[in-house]
Each structure stands twice: as C-alpha cells, then as structure tokens.
Image (tube, rainbow, N blue to C red; front, side, top):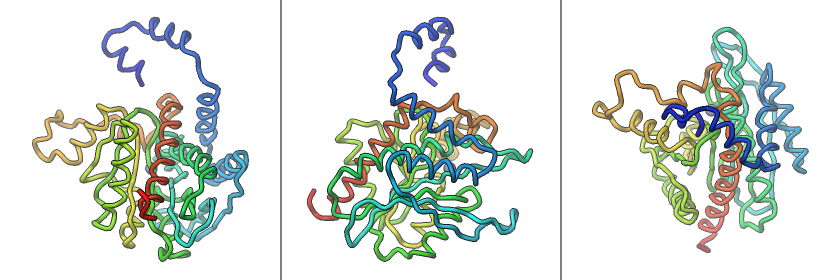
Length: 305
Ligand SMILES: [Zn+2]
C-alpha cells in the first residue's frame, strides 16, 4: 500500500524495490502473511479447515458448531462456526470475525483476504496473547461462517447459546492494511461502554482511531439487534478511513468527487481482494489491539479500571 501511494506521487518503482530489499522482514510477518494467504481456497468449507488447522497449530482446541444456514438465493447451506474458549468466569467477552468469503458473479470465490481472513488471523493472534492473561471473564473466540450470506453464522450462534452470559462483543471485519483503526458507534446505547474501552486503548497506545457514527454492517449487527453491547472494528490506511467516514457520514456535502468509491469498497467482494493488499504489520497490530480492547473491557466490567 505504501509503495502504491509513493508510486502515485512519482517516486520510481526501482527505489521502492531497493527499499523493500533493504528492509528486513520479520519472521512473524512471513508467518502472518502465509497464514492469511492460506485462506485463498475454492470453497468456504475449505476455509473452515484452514481456521481449524491454524487454531490447532497455535495450540488451541477448537470446536466446530454446525448449523443449517443459507439464504433465499443459495437455498439451505450447512454452516460451521469455529469456537475456542479461554479461561473461566460466570460471564463472557466474545471476540469474533467471519472467515467466509463471497461467491463472485462468475461463480468463483473471492480470495477474501482483506475481507476477512486478515481479521481472522488477527483474532487468532489476540487469542494467543489472551490465553496468557488472568482475566475475570471467560473469553470466547468465534470465527463465524456465512456472514456474507446475511450474518447467518452470528444469528445461529445467538439462537443456540443466547446472550445471558455475554458481557460484551468485539467484532473485526476488514483488517488487511493500514495503521488506522475504525470503530462503529451505531450499536445502541448499551454499547457505549464498549466504545469507551476502544477509545481508552486508542489513547493509551497513541493509535490513530476513527469513530464512525454510521459504520457498515458486519456480524456486530446480529448482536446489537439482540440487545448485546458490541463494537465492530477494522483497519485501513488513514486517508481511506477518512474517505470512508465521509462517504458514510458526510451527507450530501461530503466533498468527495462525484461517484468516488473508497478503495476498500473497490477491493472487497471482488476479484481484487488479493494478497497484494494485505500487510502483515496490520494483522499484527490488529491482534495486539484487539487483545488490549478485550483486556480493557474485562477490567472495566470488573470495576477495576
Ligand atoms: Zn467482511
């Protein structure tokens, strides 16, 4: 991404290539990149196997919860949510991301890496941090299926488990590149304390964050519709995040050129959602930030912050 914008400003590609050679690539970056790339599969069922394998490789014992899903267009399709539980406690904090990808008009699958394999790998990174912590809540990591068919995996999970013991939900959708975290503020008054936790983490970490009064829907909406406190998080480059803010919140006089579509919406749900747009540094940043948000919520809800 950085190189693309430099190129647009007229910096020769050769200089960028030289810089890339001179910059050491951390082993963790290679791993995270390979992990995201592994999700490029011909079917969502194959993506389920990737989630399960990556969780096992990280030392977790995931369970697969099957459900009957699908929508009017697809007919009945069996779905599979993948779940890992950490720690114990009477109440739970959920950390969630969908792993399924959309089927494109030509019948092939989107690579679904920005949307949303990068988030899934980020959430697994967060889970690795959180398992080492002593927390007041049980943490449930849920990788949802069939978000792209209409938040079906999330709805089915809520149907099966209820929300009685759910204290808060943190969802990630679109976290493939950029250093700016976006968060939705349109999940009802019950979610205000979750927003506060997010803002505290942004402040503590001097992380650039952009709050969206209107934010595009993801699995968070299944939870807020059922009354749960929830936030949806994502990452993007700073300019893109602000363009997206304007597109959703700027109204008629948002100042964007006529017909302008923020880059992220040209990528996702298309054949352009490819590894070229995934930056492992963002995946690592997302993982560390999500773990911090969950920890913050845990402390806040226990009345110890
Ligand atoms: Zn998504």
